[in-house]
Image 1 (cartoon, rainbow, N blue to C red):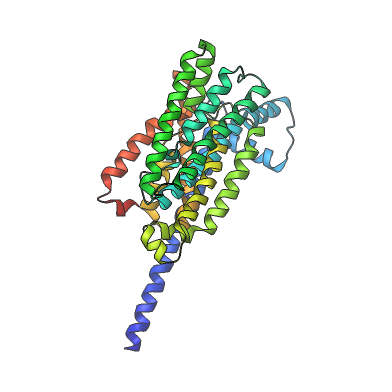
Image 2 (cartoon, helix red, strand yellow; image 1 turned 180 degrees about the vertical axis):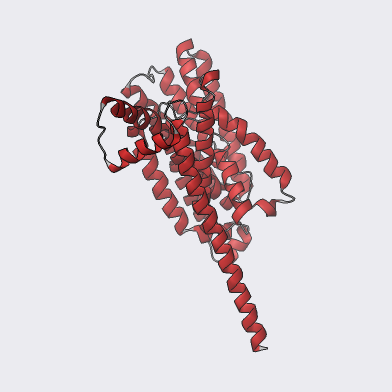
Length: 362
């Protein structure tokens, strides 16, 4: 009897180590894939080869000064014109995936994403209002004004949801319905403002809504990076509580979790996280939906691993969209938001069809 128990425990330990190894391998492979994608994206359309681009980036990181005008131009073109947008795509992809993973876990709904709360609509309204008030993309003041207004606009829907949840049933379905209603309201405001604006402002507003990273500079990145980094650390610290939320509100309450307060704190954190991203990039859809789905499908649903792996997956997906956007330059300037919609919709449909039940993916 003792030998049977010992053998059983040994098998369980082996299975556990095998699962941990699989998840670690996936995270390591994702990191390598991301590095390769970054170099490829920097090399596309520049006239420099893969290894040339790699050397340019390494020299910049190591602080090696260019020895001639040719090297200086290569360094300036790759590291100042192209790389900031790619780094922005990495940060945004990781942040949007993080928000998606948290939303899906705390709502117990695999179709939830950071935009479910109406954050994107609020940000759109703030940015469009800023543009129509005369702040343009061509000046530093204009950029700051648009970012600030978009940030404030993104926070308003979340504040409304948090306040309303105190007076009504704060179940996941109720919060999603409230977010949908708020989203429609802000979409109506955006439409009205765009209808009464002039042609130039209308074009700028439309460009912002599509979602792009090509105009982002190094000075725009610190806020996004800091918020995403802090948010990821905080979410990792409460990953076990998110696992409880996936079991349903009743089960989580039975195990001692204050579901309502925890969900409110998550909403506040996600609001700041997503607002800090879309204020600079505009609306980029599908990342928060498909990145956590793909990650859970491969390594399971434990948020302790889903969160870091999902962030890498989100960064890979958005970096791939940026690479495709650069490959399509011959057909015109195709923003990353458009490319993401083209590749995100089929992937999401495939994941839905492939899964026999929600439990397989979520």
